[in-house]
Image (cartoon, rainbow, N blue to C red; front, side, top):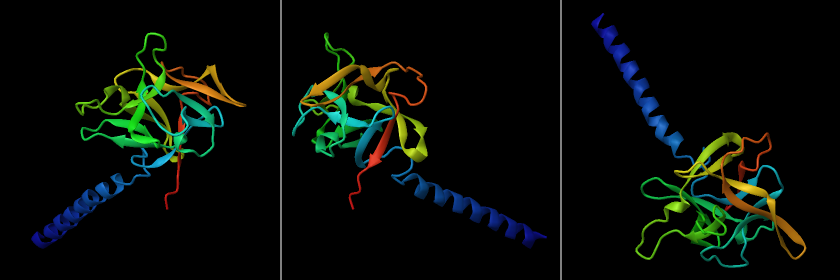
Amino acid sequence: MKRFRKKIAAVVLAMVLMVAMAVPAFAVSSHIGIPLGQLGYWNPEQTNFTLNAFASSSADNHTNVTTWPKDYSRSQRWTVRRTADNHYYITTDLSKDFALDYFWGASNNGNCDLYSVTDAAGNFNTDAYVTFITENSSAYSFGIKAEGRSLYLTEDHSKTITYGSQSGYDVRWKAATYESTPSSQVWHFDWIDQG
């Protein structure tokens, strides 16, 4: 009987160790949940456009963010990054030093623009921090919420942006609208094969 108890205890211990070892391997996959460190496009659920830094070849503070017809340029490619203390932010492929930001200006408060990730002293720009609300993990669909605020990245259909013969929409931080599907506050991540 004593020998039987030892065998049962050994089997239970082995199962506990197998589960403990399996969890970290599963959790590090970059294709599960937030696309951390992956280069790709953020496409709004309501239109065929993609998130776009409204700039030709370089990023600067207050570069406007819009949605625009996809042209596969660097101004439409984004990377989700994380600080050492686990805050997420989204940088443009034009420069990893510029991220989506909440604009506090008097005339355009709440606009989404690009702003430097750090200030001159090396402190992180907390207005760039975002939280991801999973809408559909298998389709990589998320609500992108300004961290610490009840405001979501929104394709604003009331403000059309036109350049030449093309047009898109302004992108702003707005309260949850609880729209029916499709939503102007749900964004799909489309991977770029770097491979």
